[in-house]
Length: 383
Ligand SMILES: *Cc1c(COP(=O)(O)O)cnc(C)c1O
Image 1 (tube, rainbow, N blue to C red):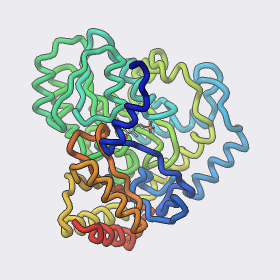
Image 2: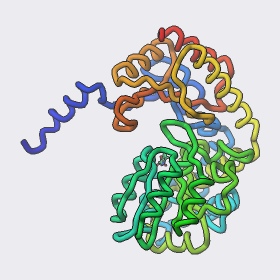
Image 3: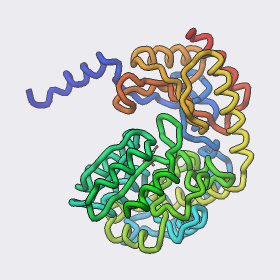
Image 4: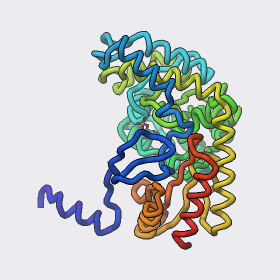
């Protein structure tokens, strides 16, 4: 017994659940280079095509020249530099909040915010399909964690009505990372307001993508003024890295005092903040990126439905093809790879058992002909 790592690894391999990073030889974008081959990339979260945008890269380079690479310390010691401050102010303005606070990653933002808001004796309510970082944060907080059925506002309302905890925090993805559908935020807020609970939305996949200015799910659902805690990430549609929480003055001051993943970690490089600021401005102003993306999404859904693929209830760039069996999902991904198309198979435990899928993601960097090539390859894969 003891640490029999090999047995554990072998078991995972036998179940077709072994994971490996693909080694990429080119920047994020429309095409990927992997294993010496150039292929169309349909699995990144770079939804607006900003990760390798010339202006964003230039902002990064200029800021690195001015500020160096490392921030040198945590925000509260001496790592909070001008570009961090400027980005926080822009994010607050963009999300219609009094303030915003930067974290180095979305994972850390979720751990920090939830553990700062609730603790032992409190209750956290999570959608069954919430991102792993939210579920982990709930556990780490010491609050009683409850899960409710996916996107089921009535189930949530019933759980909230029965709960007696002094603080009740409801947490949900805004756009679900593996399904692409959106949480019913207005109904959740009705339930929260009736039970004196707070709602926190993780909008990693909505920020930049939803709403005519890319202000995310809360604006798209017209509930921004009612939502106490908004979390967004910079590594997806904004194409950089890092994350933030936005909200009231008191919320942000609370996080500064109590969010351990804010306090005990080095501030992100100033160049990342400077690049993110340019990327945020572009994401907001360049609505053509979202319009182009919408056209690609519609084109893909039409074509995939005609081929008989099982689409999910999503009008976002996340367009998973539900396959079910782990090995079948892997085989389809490999067949696409042979045809020059990169789409990763997503298997349990990232998704529930029996729900392995190809998580197709579209980007404003794609052209209509790229979507047609993907559809042709799916047809060729023979389903
Ligand atoms: C990607 C993601 C995160 C984590 O963000 P990182 O900045 O990549 O750590 C958190 N929540 C959701 C829903 C995500 O998709």
